[in-house]
Length: 182
Length: 182
DNA sequence: GTCTATAATTTGATAGAC
DNA sequence: GTCTATCAAATTATAGAC
Image (cartoon, rainbow over all chains, first blue to last red):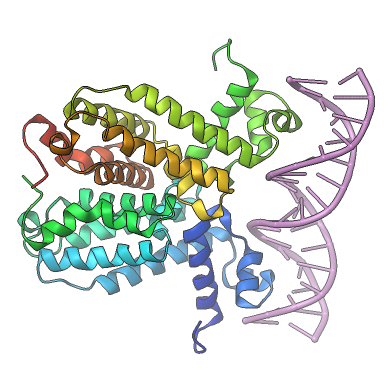
């Protein structure tokens, strides 16, 4: 929590941490207020409803992820960047926000549903912007992103950061030399 | 809801449906009572706490899954059976219970944490009991189960059953002839 | 922008009658 | 086993003072 951060961002930071650990129904406005050091009515001033908050949270998460991923020049670099993104989550034992919310998609306000879907779509679209992805990636974008989300999900379920590494090991070894795709 | 079903099983059925759609915090004892046609105090008679209920739910889910999977004689049959299990969930747009609960593992009562972890472990152990799995499966068990969970998770997130098929397409085509593993 | 106060509802859980 | 009745706490959200 940097000192030059707005209250608004501090609320989003608190919400992101709690949502990634406990899901949409796993945190309350009072939780966030306590985290930030204000009252819950003040949280409502910044975000009228919980749906508004979660929607903006998901949008910020997508924008930041794409910033982190950048514009790789080749498929190997793209795979390394994507691996690093999910590995950081596994190491910290925090689910990807997209999976944390999307798993209960049908129970979410529609704008939150759409932004969660938008995140996964954005990751796959990002892979398809990499020059030579069709022949250079070891698996198609949909399969790769599914594998990363699933490996992270089971790593959280097992409460074991190393499970992630075991699950994606075939990708990593392939990055060195060989191809998975037939 | 078969007529020869015990109230206890009917409660578990209702809980399973709701937990797979909305997660651990996405249903209440009153929801289940209404689904079954009794009062919430009666649900507490069968399951004293919500943790008790979710733990038993997860155990039943694991036992049933292993019954459905059976004892395949070769890796190709095993992959077909596992695909069918996850495909059914994707078609019905219901998350795997293990993922639905495990995604918020840190926020669950410990017995529920352990049974969710136990389910994913059971699937991988089941694959490793199949004769010839080491050379016959297109990917290692940890990678395969991660891919299935992730493809299902993103299929739910996208609210699109066909995403699952796209994500696992490399596996299916490989079942016909080739190998993914280098 | 933040507060106090509060409304209206829901939640997990228990006591005790039948 | 199921019910009525109830509790204490938590939840999302709003009104209005400062």
